[in-house]
Image 1 (spheres, rainbow, N blue to C red):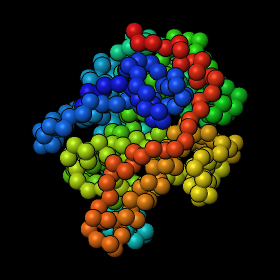
Image 2: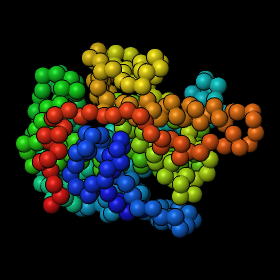
Image 3: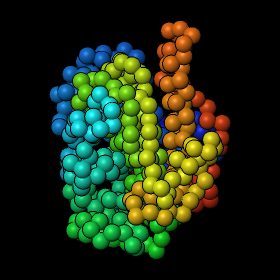
Length: 357
């Protein structure tokens, strides 16, 4: 499935595979679109996957980068641990925990940063920047890096980033403020901001959590997935990973039920879901969980949309009207969302700066 273009999630406008993250027409977010492969042989795909490296790069067929570049840290292929005692306590038959602390910097963000950095190198960038952790990956690749963090971030996290020799910039404010500043800076600096102008590629790394989980379960799907929401990207991209393998016949069944978790002091998506709203009202974070405290999640509306659609599909599975009603179509997850996205003047200003090289 080679990457084919970037497409707007809202108006479906298409763009070339360059350093771009918002639509020029409606300011909607962009995502990578892959060429269709209707004649793919599931058995051959499984063999190629299993013959791949013990990292997320075993799934190159489903990613926007065709080969891992030199100097790439071996992110992914983390343990899937069976938690029998916890399952018994919760009254479940089976419970599995994906331990992404086994990644090089002990975070699932190693997956998304690996993807963004690889694509940035393909596009010719020599400086990597972000509002999160790229220092280790940039150091391994021999690239300059800038990491923007809240000024009151936990000391341990600051040390874990600074040890790689990055340029650390402390910002008075929370991660929403940091992200806003990075969006402004991306208009003025010819850098690869992994979660801004590299965001369509960056977010694709989260799909590998779905691929690994399905493969480690013997190419079977879990019944339910529980994960943090934060910006909403991880939540939605894991679902997309399962969908892609369903479409290709690598797995059978239905998209799992998704349960998202947010800190009580910063829960815009959970609050909107509970209130039956179609939008996420930004909040000011008030929680010690700073790394997940995204008060204005970029992909929050899509996480909200996914949760509602999967809920409706689950209800259809339980419909007593017969087998046809009990078989939901996972493609229903891709309906018209019926709402616009406005990234604002900063996004529009930043958009014109970055072109493919």
